[in-house]
Amino acid sequence: MPTSLPSSLIATALLASAHGAVAAPMSLDDYLALNGPPPTAQIAYGPAPSQYAQLFRPDGNGPFPVVVLVHGGCWTVAFGGIQQMRNVAGALVAQGIAVWNVEYRRVDEPGGGYPGTYEDMHAALDSLQQHAPQYQIDTSRILAMGHSAGGQLVQWIAGREKLPKTSPLYRDQFLPVKNIVSLGGLADLRHEKDLIKTSCERDIAQLAGSASTERPDIYSDTNAADLMPNGSRTVLITGELDTISPPRVAHDYAAKAKLAGDHAEVLILPGASHYDEIAATSNAWGMILPVVRGMLGMGSMRPATDIRCDMRSNEI
Image (cartoon, rainbow, N blue to C red; front, side, top):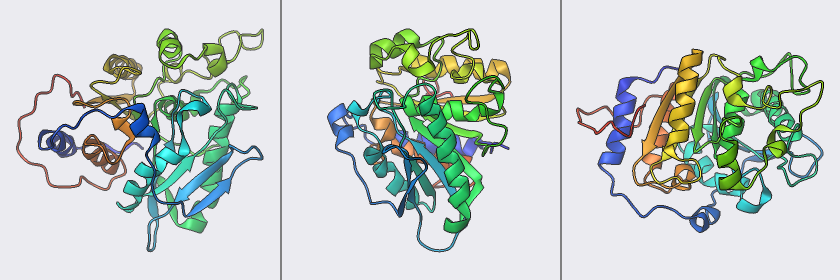
């Protein structure tokens, strides 16, 4: 069952923003320069070069809660990926959280796009479940966090139980993941296809395939917004200055999720760009980390304080 976010956690996230100086928003070059510690292990989940995950395991004895981390990059190899995620992975490990950092085949790699990229999500999570006992990982305390294109993929992960049985992506058994953090995600393929084209230069057929007699609706098994309700709790976190996935996208998705009967909240990061969202070195991380800890049942970083906040942009 998704973990409820207490009001004190929300106050902590907002307090982190209120007490921190706002730095200049990060650029794409700043993001591409991100790095972090080496992984504990690198584990292949398929034969292709991009079919692997990196495990980051805290020191000491588990069991450890785990974050499944899925990078963005407009579903293409051109804009970084798993290496940049080491920055956040290192910060999470320092909190006693294991990280499963997923690489996957993108649309410009052999086998990527539809259905391969989604099949990689299945396989990466199967591999996590298989290796969890060896590394003392508690998969009952699991959260999937994705950035940009990775946000779309983790939101899709939450709805796997709703996949049509006629879909090549259907599975009757899988590791359920119901706590989702989407950082600047572009998950509603059906309604955001024009934005995806302008922001990422991706045609929707690359992400959702082509219609056929057997599969007339290409969104039926690819669009996270069509796979609700699914019992998930999603926190959509977006930079105030994000132009790739503007705050409007998060608000629209949250409204659809709530209407469907799922739980969704929005947190807008003041003064933050699309790239601040996924950098542990940014001021924005001070607002994101308490949300992650709270969803994993670990509590917030510091006690709640009686504060007054402008809630016009923060609707978590």
